[in-house]
Image (cartoon, one colour):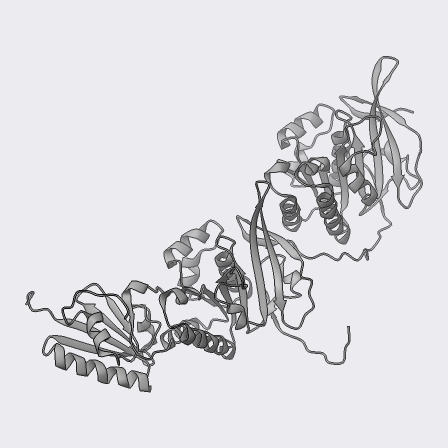
Length: 101
Length: 472
């Protein structure tokens, strides 16, 4: 199991806004395609649970947080740029790039 | 001032000593207020004091949203001021939320907004029913996010939201070079803008506050000095510089009945300011001590500013001539505040005085010697300070006595401080040493005393262990 790297992702949204819905769709799509069987996504609706925003230091919506593997990475936005999301989550091994293209 | 429309803007007390007077009651309620200044000028403390006093004095819970300092650091930094943030949090009156924005952690992809921030703030406010909010400093967001136009529109939305939420909010911002704040936050805050300034001039640190904008008011755009001490921030209040003081007609004693008799009214007016000039060793301090004593005997507290002697020295010297000050110190009738004049700037001395006035509530003030203050300011600065000082004294009808050292025995009119004070003082007594028949004697001369007649002669006096004795 330590060799099999799993991704634990948390997606913070605020209700059913277009951006939030899009982000949910996008992340589900990317994970199915690139991380089949190796991921878990938790969707947290801050409108229902506002107190949870503090823990992961959320200020933007939507925010995708990669809890595992460490270090924590945050991606804010509706995740429509697939390449950036994959690089940001370090899914495709293209070197850990933090440059914004 | 027209009275066609009577619009009363509700105000929220600021919690900063002196600032409520300057703003005519406080900040505009339920509006955003911008406090800008360079690093270290006191913005964060300003915000914290606003919240803490809001809770403690006005029972208004508050939320502090910190974008820079951690909750622990904030708590530690203000503990020494008597602000116990942990205690207030435990009582559910204060919430401190640290929004940490780590640029290296964040990627931006696609459309987003700052709703997360809104949700956090809303939750924090609702959880304790907060009426006051501080955002310190929202400009940090500019460092964490690249989408500036989005950020700006969200900030605009945030300020609108704060107004709707009905909270009085302080927003802090870094001083900019070309604009008031680095990120131009003043664009979004039009109700009240305050600028804090921190300068070091001639090795002395001065802090100043200026109200750049205040909705619906034509306040003065003067700078007001403020200090940060062990109780937080205090600003020197605006004083009425209109010369419309009440003029008491009650007569009080100088402390020396023989001296009282040299005045046509048998003493000096209450609320007057008296100046005693003389060269070194002419016993001005002794006369001041008599004055203090007489106030104590009337059960009127005395604040004695000593710029040259320590309290112990003063007490010892006075007791050697039969003036016993110690019992009055014990009974808290007399407070001797000793300080080195060069320790603080002129305005700071004024502020300290004002603070002590507020805390100790004396009826008599003595400054011995006021000429020490000339070493730390130009003549015009000293004069300006003196005008404000005398204004405070007159407004509060305090009896004031200043001693002043003159250097040239020949003329008491050539000294800069004397110039400044003598025209402002109501009563002026000059003391000189003279050698008469090989014997050192002292004499005093009443140069002026407004509103009453007085002796025009030099009166010699001696000092013994029983005190001052005027001849004949």
